Picture 1 (tube, rainbow, N blue to C red):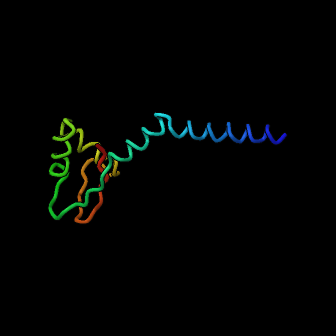
Picture 2: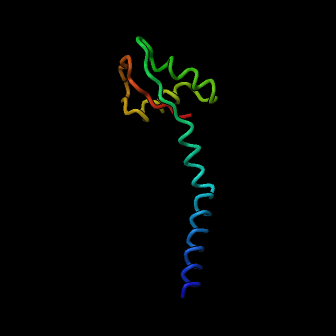
Picture 3: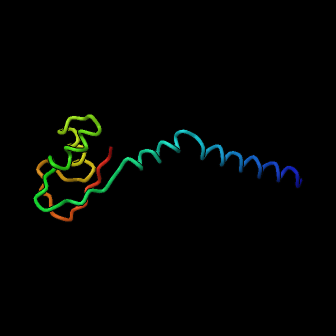
Length: 90
C-alpha cells in the first residue's frame, strides 16, 4: 500500500514536471516577454510611437498603430495624454 502511494505520488510529480516543460507553456512566456509599456510624452502621436516598432518588426506602420489601438482600447481616433501608459506588443 505504501509503495503504491509512493508510486502514484512520483508519477504525479513527474507529470507536473513534464507538463511545465512543454512547448506550449514556454510560448506563453515568450509572448509575455514581447510586450512593453510606453509612457506617452507631451505632444507625442501614435505615428511617432509606432514608427520604431514598425521598423524593428518589419510591419507596416498602420498595422502597428491599429494593434496599439486594439490592445489599449483606444478607439479609431484616440487622443493621447501625457503620462498615459500604452502596452505595445512585438
